[in-house]
Image 1: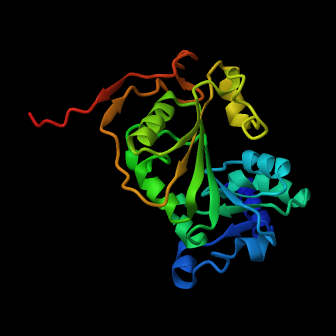
Image 2: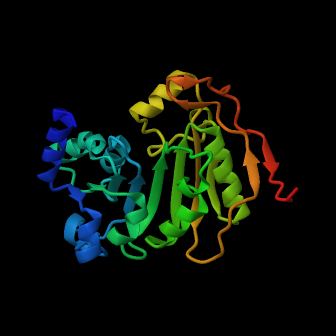
Image 3: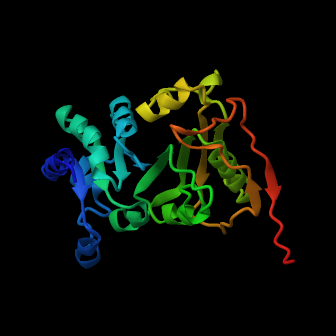
Length: 264
């Protein structure tokens, strides 16, 4: 491990806005602020909003700066990434922002039922071959239900035509109420507001290459069966910033086929 990473990890150990709990400690003792984020950390009754896979924390910091009447927590497993955002929160003394270094699967260890008002998922790996690892898949929606308020809102911003298409199909298949849905966020004159206008470094890279940004949000009721749609979706033609050919910017609707489950 490089010295720079070690220094970042050391810095974060002393940052009051950063929480790091190994699973062994969680399993044995639990998280002391579970159900008490408002009273013990934020010292207010404002809504709590999570950003999953927050990376450098740009979106978490941007939201917290624009909305001082809401509380934001960036979550990522890679601590060296969130160091940048955590430094900004500490330096700017932003009392409505925090960072949590953990796996998304462990959310119920850190938050009580109904403690979270909204969840943002910004530019995740689309996991085209592994639906159980897809952050907008039904496995994760069941997990979000354990911490979200009934009818809490879930947001997705993505550059991936595959993930955007899948998420829309999944939401409609499960009759989840859609609030917004656009395959070209910045080309839609009605699509950009104070929240959506925050652009991360990663997002700007894709915009500079001519890729459109997709956005979809929905509410998640606490009850109701969730199931995966039986469809096959045309995969993205690229996997990373430097690998593969980009789809045309206008490609918002990859080919979708109903799965054939008949055994030959």
